[in-house]
Length: 397
Image (tube, rainbow, N blue to C red):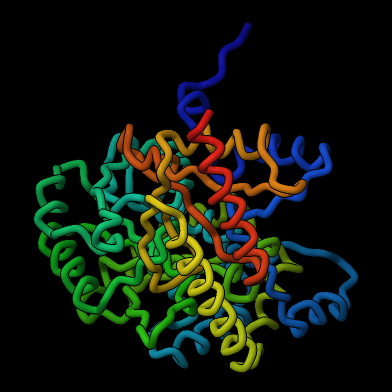
C-alpha cells in the first residue's frame, strides 16, 4: 500500500474543529450545543457587501489579476491610510483568506528547516502553516498570570539561531485576546532589526479593541519597512468568514515580488468574494461602533460568569473576541469530548476548544480551554452555567 508523506502525518489536527463529529452526535441525540469553540461571529454581514454580489452583472466569471482587483487594492489602500497606515496599493496582494497570506509570508521568507519564533499560545493553524511550509516553530511561552503579555525580549533573544528568519505575532491575539502595546511593538521592532529578521503581524482583529486601548500596527513603526509584514482579512471585520479574502502587506519590494510568484501559482483570488470585500469598505462607522459595543458587553458578561466557577482562572482580553480560561480539571481534551458525548443539562451542553492545541510545547495548556464570545449575552450566561455544573459532575466521576 502506498504511504502518505511525513508532512501529511505530522500535519496537526485543528483543536477547534476536531470535536465536530462529537457535536454532531450530541445534536442527533436532541441536545442543544452552545458553540464556544469557533470564532464564527453571529453579527450580520454588511448589506452593502451582500448587495454588491447580488447586483454584480457579468457574462463570464473570469480570473482576476493574481494580486487581486486593482480597484479593490486601491480602495483598500485608502482604507488603511484613513486609519493612519502608510500603505499604497502596490504594497498589497489579495489572498484567499488570511490563511493564504500567512502561507505566502512563510513561503517567501523561509526555507525548509528554518525557524519562526511565535509567542504561545497562538492561533492553532500557525502549526499547520509551518508544517506545510517545512518550517520549525520555536515557541516562547506567555503566561495567563500576566494576561498573556509579551514575554521578556531576553526570552526571544536566547532562542534566535542562524536558522531563525521571523517572529510571528497575532495582534490582538487569537486565542488570548491580548493587545500588544506600542512599547511592546517597539521592543519587537528593535529586536528584528538587530538580528535582521522579519516581523510578521497577523492583524485580522485590529478593530476589536476595548477599554479605550489603541491598536498599534506593525506598519506604523518607522524604519521597519524592510522587516514588516502585515496579514489582514475581511473575515472578522465584516463578519465575512466564508468570503475567504485576506491580504499580505509589506513595503519590502523583494518580499512582495516573491509573494507575487506564489500568488501567480495559485492563479487568482475568488472574484465574487472580492466584489463583496471591495463593497464592504463602504460599511459605515456606525456598524463598527455597534459591533464593538456588543462584543465589549459580551466580554464583560463572559468574564464575570467565568469568575463564578470555583478554581477557574481567566485573563481578561483586551481585544479580539476570545479568552483562555484555566479550569479546575486535568485534561481539557477529555473534558471537551465528555461534554459532547456524555453530558447534558436539561438537554443542553457546551462545545469548547481545548487550549493545548494552541501551544506547540508538549504538556502545556492541558487544563485550559479557548472560549470565543461570539454568542449573545444570554447564551453566554447559560453556556457558562452548564460548564460550571459539568465540571462538578466530571470531577466526581
